[in-house]
Amino acid sequence: MKNNKIILIILILAICLFGIGMFTLNRQPFNRKADRIEIKNGTTGEHVTFEGDIKNEILEKLLNVNSSVSGVALWTSGYQYKVIFVTGNESKEVTIQSSVGFTSNGLKYKVDGDIIKIIEDIIENK
Image 1 (cartoon, rainbow, N blue to C red):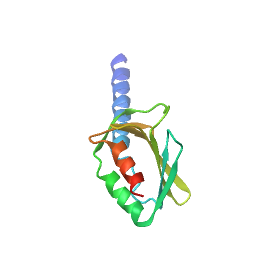
Image 2 (cartoon, one colour; image 1 turned 135 degrees about the vertical axis):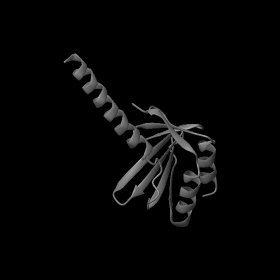
Image 3 (cartoon, rainbow, N blue to C red; image 1 turned 90 degrees about the vertical axis):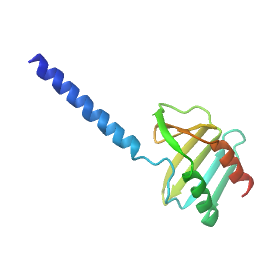
């Protein structure tokens, strides 16, 4: 009887871990189909909106960033930049906290390059 309970608990945990793994692997932090992209500077409060061809160039740059899930983000306090992808009435936020990491969809991501430099280059060349 005790062994059956242990096996059942292990099976439930394995299913939960598999579900969480599939959820995190299939989540793309950047929205490919955004109508516009808004970037907000967390230090100055400056807010810039991009649409059309410029938006497509920005998406291309962001999608070329190699990112991987590094953990779960329970809360976000302070940020360098907030990138908001707006599609119709829906929006998706990516909060960039450091040059090597950001949060989105409740997950922490690490990046290979300097994502803050990419964002600053985008804003400077607007």
